[in-house]
Image (tube, rainbow, N blue to C red):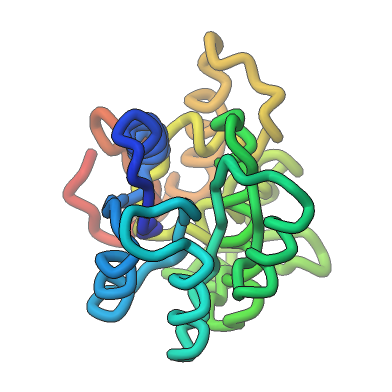
Length: 230
């Protein structure tokens, strides 16, 4: 589960963002002051920071500068009502990775967060999603196998499996799966996600001793070895 530090002193905006991110299975810590943000980042690991500029103690620009001077490289997304080109340039020069002006659509905020997380994941080079618990994905051939047995996946099933492999051992909501695999084009009134999960289960888990794709009650699905969620 990705961890987000939300630095926002407007309670209404903070509540709106917090609720939306938690619905998409982000773990969020919210603070309202710049020094609290610096302390939180010093004491905890976060995957991304959402940072307001106008804070009651120091500015978001100063928070950026302090964190970058301390060699903290977590992605920073500035979210501010200050939307002039000069302010955006100042934010990026202070060390921010992206800048989104208020008011904003939550969908755009979410897309920008996901983009920064993808870039960070790519840059880190530490996540090998092509192999897990006997599953092997061959990206060149666009194929997958388990314990050496070809799974014969459709292109959609392969994309779904890749998403699970990249997020293994994480609970994934149906909405998160739909956004990743269907590129937001899915009508969420349908049971398309559940149907394709069943397709994938029949190929990934059927005839194998240990199931890997598990239902997480009240949430969605998870790819995990020996899960107790079912």
